[in-house]
Length: 263
Image 1 (cartoon, rainbow, N blue to C red):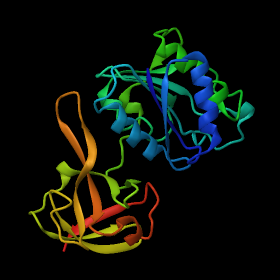
Image 2 (spheres, rainbow, N blue to C red; image 1 turned 135 degrees about the horizontal axis):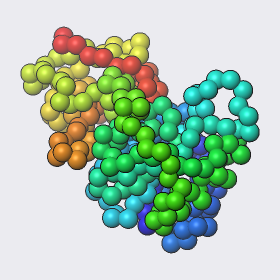
Image 3 (spheres, helix red, strand yellow; image 1 turned 60 degrees about the horizontal axis):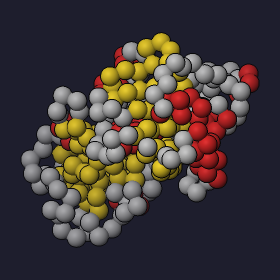
């Protein structure tokens, strides 16, 4: 089995090793790949759950995620209680186990065959993804569904925002939550893009490399997936050819607002 472990522990943080160790205790043959998202970023978590879960991969896959800001209740929390654990089965057979918080399931909610609560403690440890949740994830990976609880309606999960920074990759390309299908501009149009408080001119393109060196492109990017009805989803990116778009826009964090208009 392949397990994608998505967490907001921090790049290279030993927490990934601790959680992987607990998962391997129950699933010794599993191959675990770790992906770090920014602290408390349920948007980045949800984006990568969809990108990994809805694209081709090993037939036996589990996504185990933890990003729990504990913002569902701002009062004092007894026994380190936080958001509850959930189960998702996608139409392609991929299974997802993790905390339902913010946008974690927003990108996959309409692609799921089922979404359920998992009947495990919501508290018991500050480090629930190591001490409480791996047993449930391992049971589900071994096709033991006895812990599944009530169904969760997709309507109870927020829609993903359509105007945010979703991720900045190692090349400085800014991935956004703007669907490419929503952009209605003539090819090579000049646009003005705002990310947070920073504004820059850009060129709308159907392919990032179809702009000259040093030009900021606003173009359909490399991220996206196919929905269960066959529709292809592609997300817009900002790409500075020969440079770094993330630095151009003052290194915006995930979830920063982004907008564009024709110049």
